[in-house]
Length: 90
Length: 167
Image (cartoon, rainbow over all chains, first blue to last red; front, top):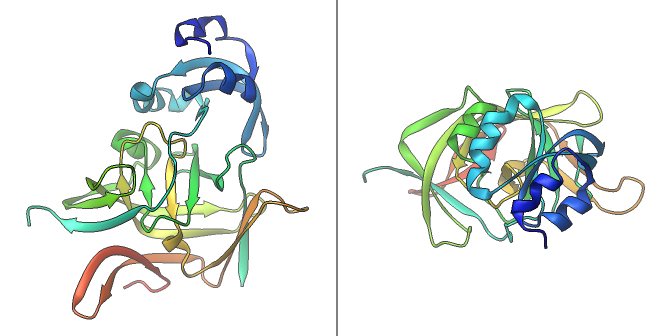
């Protein structure tokens, strides 16, 4: 596994999605100039690798850049999501 | 009945498709048959960047469970018009004043979790094999949906149900 510190070796380079998953598992990645297959990215130029804690800020700051931003591996195992709307202070 | 089709991801193992937001950006939605409420996973600032007209519902919260913790209380937002457009033609369905549980779940890939309850007035099929592979097709009579509280007799549960009627 490549340490996140080495991301600078890959920024600016064209990577396939599979290679990005291999290099940066469970990380958010941002790409530009992407070749897409349906809604999936086949390859693109790596712009950045982002930690979970920074992703919301990163998304807001880079919306206008129209990067392809995705997490290489999902951290959500899925299951039953239940919700109820409640009135506060009751 | 009309229908629309969405391309689903070949990479994700769960049915995931993209939608275009109010801001014109493209984000991913997980179609989750195990969810009974719609969820946004990237926090309030991202939600408002993508849907500037979304409104915080003051005085209310969404009590949700299923993300590995017992129960969480998260902000309740309403999106005035939440649209899912076909990837093949100009057809679409839309949800009026969609209630959204707005969470910060940084580890979840999809920005939205669209609950199966949103599609309770549709038929849908996920195609994984064959010539129509990797798409979800949704059939509907009326392309506009509204949320109402689910109730049984005198008891009201704040769980979302979706109806074709503006009640």
